[in-house]
Amino acid sequence: MMTKESTSRNSIRVSINSWIFIMFDNFRHWIFSCHKKEFFKDHPYIVVELGLGTGENMSYYRKCTKSIAIKPNINIHSRLQKKVDKFGINLSTRTSSVETIDLSRDSISLIVSTFTICSLENQNESITKIKDILMPRGKFVFIDHVKTNKKELTSLIYKSIHWFFESCHANKNTKSLLKEAGFTKAIIEDHNTCKSFFSVISHIKGVAIK
Image (cartoon, rainbow, N blue to C red):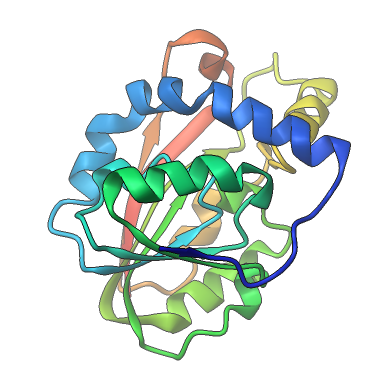
């Protein structure tokens, strides 16, 4: 079952972003599937997911999982509904920002973010909030874009990535922020792929434990 808690955003840019995410759904699955299978192994039946995108993580969840999606792209709602039905997910969407999630402190054992932290304007506050609502020993698992030292990433390329990929900031020091956020343990690995244009963007993947 899928429920909406607010109205949709309407703009040409958001529609273009939605179309791009749909196009790259299977491609990102091909690149990151092995990591996701490990991340979601034996996951709890309640999962908080930041962003949600096209619902590409649903195929890794067990049937009847309750997925609480924070600020999803409502323009992909019909596609999300198909995946909800296909994988038997109980999906609830919330449009609050990550730093204002209305979930209780120490209430969630797993929070998921795949390519969402990079799009957050207030990364410090958002990561603090994520840590706050996690249960003791709860996990925050993530795959994301991070700042790179590669010279080919000019200001124009960064701006293009930002516009086409729903406000993605591919030049933020997200890795350092996660390391310094005060988690009990943070396992963060660099993940650079040679496949297509992804080769010019640096990625990290990892788990942060409260």
